[in-house]
Length: 144
Image 1 (cartoon, helix red, strand yellow):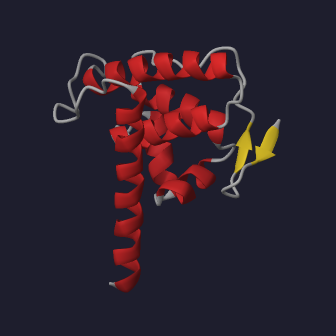
Image 2 (cartoon, rainbow, N blue to C red; image 1 turned 60 degrees about the vertical axis):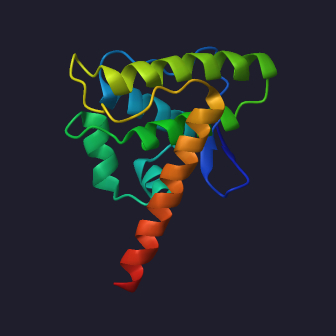
């Protein structure tokens, strides 16, 4: 079941009892997060200023998704929740999984420069900064 949120995106109700889990592959984790927020990859691509094939590359494991993209999806998943207990559970689980995912993708440390997120506010700020940078990049491309 999908709902229409305040930002105009068609989003699924993210009220599943368990949050998406990192299972040793960034692609599966990214797909699990994205599918909780956006029914279609093209909607995620539009939100983050990316091309649809880029989202597919992330989810199929052809290219590692940027940590800001994962953080942004995690924040959107939590933003769609309503129950305070569920929100707290999701935040704790997703924070832990994102910290694990960006440091250990199948034993490869691919994001050595990404900070360890101490709390949800830090993760949210990282996600917000990523989205602002994507919007800025997209705006620059329009004027080029």
